[in-house]
Length: 68
Image (cartoon, rainbow, N blue to C red):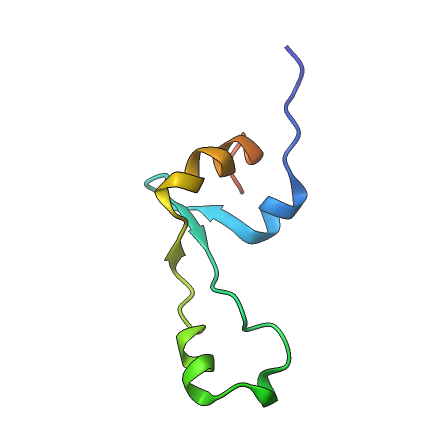
């Protein structure tokens, strides 16, 4: 059986925790921060957001070997 390819876009956005949950970073924290309110910036600060359970199966197909 051939090797499965990892989706590179998903690799940059998601990672696995030790227990197998799919972790993601919050959006709106990359650029244009001078125009955003402090409240909006604070809401995006959380690094340990988890992917929704409905999306988790699809993400696991995109990252077949884990994201190491």
